[in-house]
Image: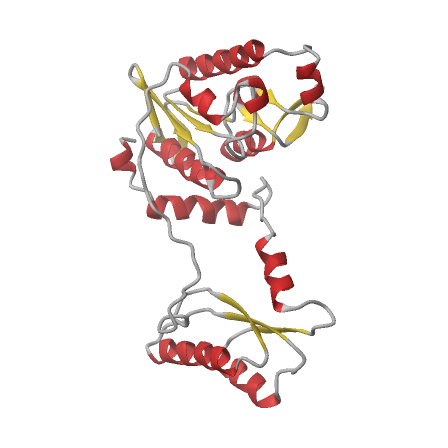
Length: 290
């Protein structure tokens, strides 16, 4: 979604669910915009126009000194990109412990929260060439006090919606269950020789072409991998972990992996760089008009 305001612009990064890439996308956008609005002076890159970031409503927050707590993503962006804006504008509303009770008791009102977001946004727009605004976790957050993602986006805004379809389903057609997928981790029972053979065959085919699928394998079940299978996996450069059923079964293991969420932090510079580069490689900034 994009929003235009006079000659300045801002971009809202929203979703209907958590952990789907809002922060990663915002990282790439801010990095691209900083490069666009910068210049070289004696070999040093300095900003000629400011890029701002805002998380209007934050759930998870960190202390930044002086008794102030801000959204963890606002902290990440300010520290990683060296943004100059005040934390109170980058993170105008957070939901600390006990917030819901305070709201119900009338200690804070929806009008006050909305005004905090308005003031913060106005400050950022007045001092920046472009503002990247990241929505909070999911559509329900903030609904109790009339400040969820849609309501924040709807204030004085004209929205442009870019529809897209993202397919993220396991194959169901037996003819393409084992279609080669780069960097794929397969969890299967140790008795599924057909699955294991398919992984080995796909890797062998790619290596004959001088490529590498970088597959991984986690095996469960009572049958420990045989020495011959271990040798084939080593030859194919396929890392494998065997998990005995006394630990967990395939379903439990898959649920544990699916439930794990890797979060970005300011000290993980390698992942921050990779996330930024991923957005640069796959986002058409010209189409977005930035």
